[in-house]
Length: 348
Image (cartoon, rainbow, N blue to C red; front, side, top):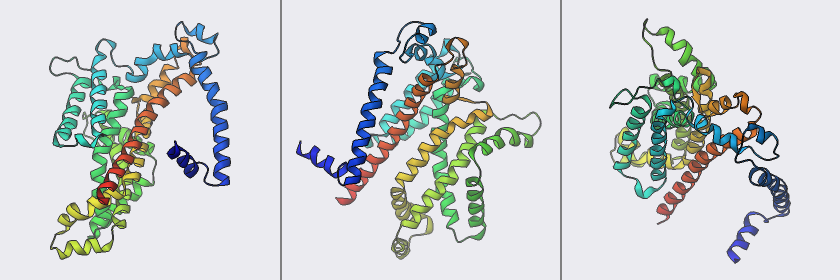
């Protein structure tokens, strides 16, 4: 009990300004929180039709039940909906294992590699007796997870190479890295997606077509890698010059010193901004609608266009906001635990 009181004093009432803000925040939470609980749980409608919901004062949870599969999986054929459901389950299971450091091993890496193959087979089909499904019908949560996860996996090492290139003493490599980073960071993601979808196919040989999902994935990797490069460069600059000199004194070459001494320290320093960039990328996948890919946000918007369910905007976007929050909050908590584990090992 005393520990709780000390925590409140230290974090919420450690000055007159913080005390006032704490009281105001508590008041707002109690005032509006009671209304949200009333709307979501007490007056909400769990059974019935759209007409039943329009006559009630609470949330229309019938809408969520009715549009649940469409919001999560878009236009994917309902008779084989088990395939994307299985893929999402495998992804979430691996994500849970990855967030626990005791499961970190080569087997986990192989598991992620195998999971992408399995998810591609499940979604695309055409092999092992699975009915083929065109990528135009992919949508919702699986598409968002694929774009975000693959984007992060490939953009991070590319960002590291660009950061090293920007600090390189070779003029050509340094110039290329600087130009690439500054150009990409100087334009919005929408323009990069537009270029990958509309302009890039114009340069392909006649009759050659590249999948839209692949084009969007490449555009996201190119865009995020420039931001990752700046994050990593900040970590490299934070490493004391003595570490570089110590590596040279040991007779280590450039790549040996980077891999064994500099990068491990630099990447630990930049865990918070790296996760912040990853969270931003996860949310920015909603921009793929510009090239007609139906991610989680678009399937939510499309579900509201049903004439029978017009007007339940708050319920729809509150539901999808919860999904985004769960994934983003999980990434944030994972980064905090990872920082704490690394700090505790350094202290011991």
